[in-house]
Length: 277
Length: 275
Ligand SMILES: Nc1ncnc2c1ncn2[C@@H]1O[C@H](COP(=O)(O)OP(=O)(O)OP(=O)(O)O)[C@@H](O)[C@H]1O
Ligand SMILES: [Mg+2]
Image (tube, rainbow over the protein chains, first blue to last red):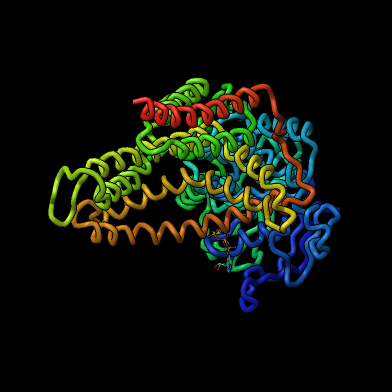
């Protein structure tokens, strides 16, 4: 059974225009899923559907056996699926790192001693143990976002949803956050759903969903997705830079294999080509 | 903008930091009462209060400059109160007669008195927020206001609102700074003109600030919901509040201050009687 299952989900804020239209998707435990789409395509709304922050008008959302249709199970869903949002400043509730991380466990009534353990666990999972007693105000964007991730991890979720959590960060901060998420997915087997519009973050995913105007228009592995260049561009998205370059080179007659997505791979192939000459 | 320290926690491991938030809140209130107990012109009482602030600052390991800066934040208010005292006090010997306004020696004394009084109150209050993290402060207030629960006052929510407000002060100050710079880059002028012109120039700062605050509030609400916030029901607390010997000593010191102030008031009376 998939960990998360959306069946024919539709949602509208104003009861007129559907922001999410008839979406079906499923996510397996331990997967790394990417959801991409241009601005206003409904990605954030989809993310909020995943942890019952908004409830579907039609269709069903099932998470780890809990249904969002049942009011009593909404909190079980929120405990299972943690969401990290875009702006780190707007999701930290406390002025001291450990107090902020404690907020989630406090909300669900966890005992004091265990909250302490969870703070240790969550902060070391994001590599921020040293900042336990500091104020988030004095941290960098990437560090703040890692604290936000810790705040979510303290609830021991099975799924981590990132709603453009790297969009406001500088390249260094982005790298920090992505490597933390990567590690969580690899070592802790946390299922990751990364909602983003950075194509290079998509490359790493096991599965990609492309959203356009509230609908899922494409889905598959990254290399399957990036073969459909025309469809991607029709959704207002761009290919990863490495893929664009490889594509342009192939068109000019350079003998490169299909399906190059990362810069490392492109460099490798070009070097291999050079040594052949 | 950045050096507005009022309300900003200064993390340190000290005697004062470790005191129970509830005692610190009550002690601050007692201290403020103490400052107000000082009768007109009995500046010795103020000296006692200042000494108290000084001792607390040193034991709290907070740089005294940080405490002093809190006065800067409300300088405008202090000066305004002093000016009102100065101009609208017509008792006492006239020192300067500007036909429509008379400045008297009593007015001058009163103005000085007001300045010292407000400053001392602010120093004490800022010591509380410098040494108590917003979460502790909120927990303390929640615990102190607990009896109000019985008249259906939303104690928990009130405390949470307070701590979030304190948490967002620096964020919003940063943002104000940014907006002012952005408007300046577009040619806005905040420095010239009379007070009304300057106030009007602030409108293009306040409106974006207000809009962005609403957006922040919205996002914060989502983030809190996502972390399973559902009010005070079944909620636990990570930080335990416990009274220790420190709190006893703090209480004794504040009580001592109040006794001292009352004694000094009477000391003056005795002195005048004796003379
Ligand atoms: N709270 C709301 N009330 C009403 N309409 C909303 C609300 N939130 C989003 N919308 C609308 O729903 C649509 C989808 O918004 P959503 O935030 O899900 O898109 P997105 O893909 O996350 O966009 P972005 O890339 O800007 O984050 C937009 O047209 C937006 O205007
Ligand atoms: Mg969004």
